Structures are given as C-alpha cells and as structure tokens.
Image (cartoon, rainbow, N blue to C red):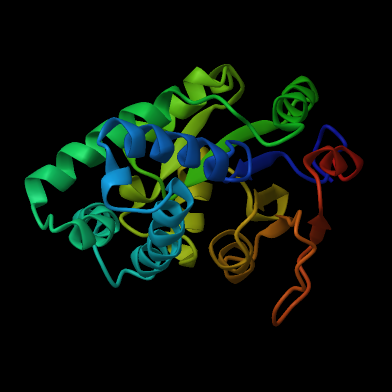
Length: 236
C-alpha cells in the first residue's frame, strides 16, 4: 500500500480507444474526407472505402509499434493504399490529405462511455494521472484538450519522447523515470493487448485490460480485465 492507503499511485492511460473513441471519431473524419474529395467517383460506397482503409491502417500501426516502419511511411502508405486504386500515387497529395485528416480528428470529442466520469473520479481520489501513447505529438494533446481532459493529467508521455514504442518495455521504464513513479505503485490501463498489456507486463507493471469485446487473453492473465471503464472504480 502507498502512504495514502492505496495500492496504486500513478495511473498510466492509453488514449486511443481507451479514453478517446478513435474508431468512431476517425470514421467520421474519413467520411467527411470521402465526401469533400468526391471519392464516391471511385468507390461504390463510403463503407467500401472505409473497409479498404481500416485493415491496412491497423496493419501499418502494428508495423510501426514493432519499429518495422517509420512515422512517414505509416502516414503515406495508409492513404496511398486507398488512393492508388483511383490512379493517384502522389506523395504530396497524400500528405495534404493526411493534414486535413489530422486537423479534423483533433476537433472530434467523442469519448469511450464513462471516460470523463472515471477520470474525474480518479483525479478527485488523489491518483496521479498520465497518458502513455504511441500517437503523434501534434495531435494527442489537442485530442485531450478538446475533450476537456487536459486539467486532469500531469503529463502526456509519447513514444516520440522515449524514442521507443509500446509494447517495448523501455517506454514504460521511461515513463516511470520521467514521472518519478514507483513500479510497484503504478498501473497501466489500455485496450491493446499487445501494446498496453503485454508491454506493461514485460516491464513488470500491473495492468488493467479494457476489453469490451470480451476477448480471451493470450499467454498470461492480466492483473485486471474489465469490459467497461466504470468497472475500474471497483478496482481503485
């Protein structure tokens, strides 16, 4: 137990699809872009466009986490993949499209159900709250601010700061050192089994797996497994 009687003191939250509703916010932005740039001339429907984009985007993020590709490759290839069937293979066009996409996403405020209430509850309870994310610097702080969550978090720790990405244990060690947090008093909360839960486990940090899909764990049991964010109040 910590001096205030709590087992944990420092709580590290993933942002995307843990607090900020990445899937639905990004889907809205992509539909806006689909309409603005008249991509319906090339795809039979927005769903066809989205179903082309999303699996490839997820695959690229996995490669990015594993240091198989760099940031620029991720940005270019996730958009060029849906542009090439239209006969467009222009990097400058893809970068401009990416900038439009990022500006739109930063303005979206849809959060995962119960996120704001949970953060308010934990902040009032005296926990130290941090964001630990692989997301890009220019967008993550805007997401947090526009959702009204910035005042509750002491710091946003990004893979770009640590020069290593989740799930590598070095980013978790970086987070502990740079927040003056003890490993035994820290807890990682996230939706990604690989990035958040496996990464924290490798770094010997307890984990809360936000698992709304009730997926089975692989290789080991996480410290905690919840299907909704309000359940975390029962842990902390």
